[in-house]
Image (tube, rainbow, N blue to C red; front, side, top):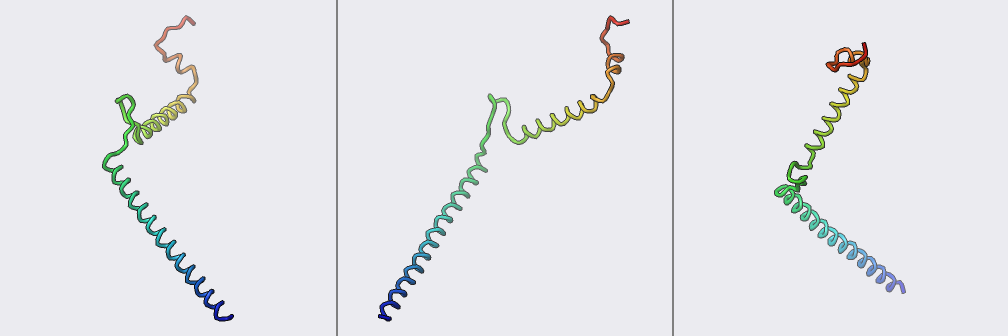
Length: 101
């Protein structure tokens, strides 16, 4: 009886070793193909970049976003600086004629 249990344990142990090794080989092969696909996609993207254009006038990319942020920030700074000035300065230095005498 003892011989059969040892033999069964040995086969079970060998089965699990072969199962785990097969899993490692399959996962390694899948990862290798995935890395190759990622490399090919990156190379294709570098050689043929994806460009979004608005009616052929300008590109939608990071430079557009950066320039919009810079413009908005500049206007905010100007509005903050002008917002503190009293309203009398604008009326007295204006070239518009008013009827108030």
